[in-house]
Image (cartoon, rainbow, N blue to C red):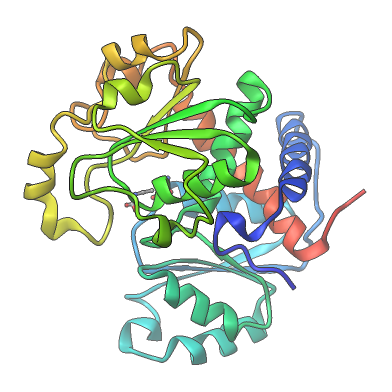
Length: 303
Ligand code: CP
Ligand code: NVA
């Protein structure tokens, strides 16, 4: 049994399979062809933080595979009344086939997985967001082909998305140019990297974008860090992806954002709503990529 708790849980070869499978699943979806590979399987979705995309993509995706879902939040389950995570894992995994969790500390999802009888998927933690980068790279491949050897500019917080991009670069052979405000840097140990070979740090976000094939960013304040909002607004003021940054990138550079976005903060409206932005494909691809992921965790490689 395999879990998907961080990007490096899969090999490059497994990603090659998943990207090809997601493309097939997407093609069938667009042609209104049934793809019922998970009939009678149940996905439990546990949300300890808000969500639009993750909820809709997993829920719609599981139904499209012929399965069903159970949706739990902290507020409407015993999770919010301090039932130990280990006990919750033992119970939920006896009744369902697969569990997706969005929570705070990575250690929490690791404790759940250690006590689960079924595969566990990380739907976002403070440290990682592997399902998002899975969809992002699938989107890059759809638009531009292989990401190996390319440069991704990360402009903004050294957060869960940044850590996940760094793991992906390490595994899939591309480079990340990281630019964060001082005090919000990525931490190699937290990101779980073996070395710093696959990323370069820039103090100036414009420099980070120079020649990049993909420019990407995220909110200044992630969920769970709202108390830091005011300090972050001041610190991040120059980390707004604007038209000048996109002009410094490669001529055919793409722009991505995991969403939700704040126009006028981390990205200029003209960029996110402009011709280089692929954010809507990126959001849609969460569903196709995660259908491939759920199928893989339950059935392995399907011929
Ligand atoms: N990108 C993403 O995970 O969005 P949600 O918070 O809406 O799920
Ligand atoms: N970094 C953001 C991503 C939201 C999808 C957060 O954790 O809130």
